[in-house]
Image 1 (cartoon, rainbow, N blue to C red):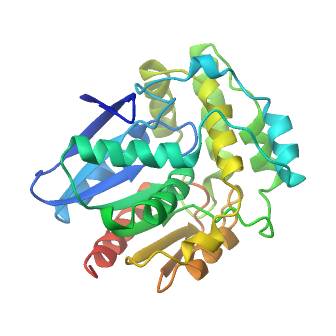
Image 2 (image 1 turned 90 degrees about the vertical axis):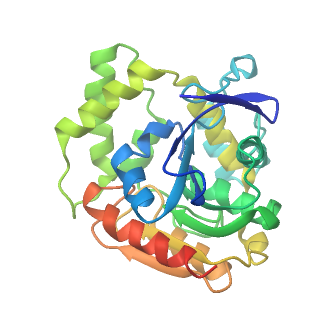
Amino acid sequence: MPKIIANNIEIEYDTFGDPTSNPLLLIMGLGAQMIFWEEEFCELLVNQGFFVIRFDNRDVGLSTKFEEAGVPDIMKLVIAAQRGEKIESPYTLEDMADDAIGLLDALKIDKAHICGASMGAMIVQVIAVRYPSRVLSLTSIMGSTGNPDLPQPKQEAMKVLLTPAPTEREAYIEESVKRWRVPYGTGFPFDVKRRRKMAARAYDRSFYPQSFARQLAAVLASGNRKPTLASIKVPTLVIHGGDDPLVPVEGGKDTAEAIPGAELLIINGRGHSLPPETWPQIVDAIAKNTAKV
């Protein structure tokens, strides 16, 4: 996979489809490598006429790591956020938004459709506010606004988020499968074999759990983005799982309420996950939203 230098860091990226087609930038979530935008999902988007770009956010996968920044204390971060205290982070969601725009610059793409999942949804919100002239349409999946009045993650999902991962390969793979099951939702089959294969691929490609705390710090430091989202004018689609225990569905509703004219798609039975059974529905909804441009 190719690399580029953007925003003073190295970014690992990958593309699918014809570069002359409509560009669609995919941004993944907390601690997740770009391979979690699975190839089959990307090909479905290509079939809808998109030139699909996925990349490793800073500090994950094969992009630049911020080792010198140290590892923040996750529990202290969470407690400080609950108290409404100022969060110090090694970098911000704005920095990560700048990374994405730097990638588009390197690829000589002036405007793109943007789609983010979980933390990636928060990053695309920041991009749309920070760089309105670069965005054709916005899709926010499993995201929220940072509004402190919204329901918090359920206890079992929070435990998954905060418990350190095993470092030994086989233990990591098995533990990852157990953890993914918790927020997955009950409306779609949980494919253990598929999840085990994905965990193994992620471990072998880049096992780097230190990034998780730094990216979480960036999310918590972002605070309440809801007041700024009213400035977004592009066609916006908000997709959320009705059974999401990590980012409760109210986060999706709040996002849709904050962005003028946004369409809200709630998929019942889906948790904080992208089950393959939902891909055709999600891809079709993205295509219809981009067609509004």
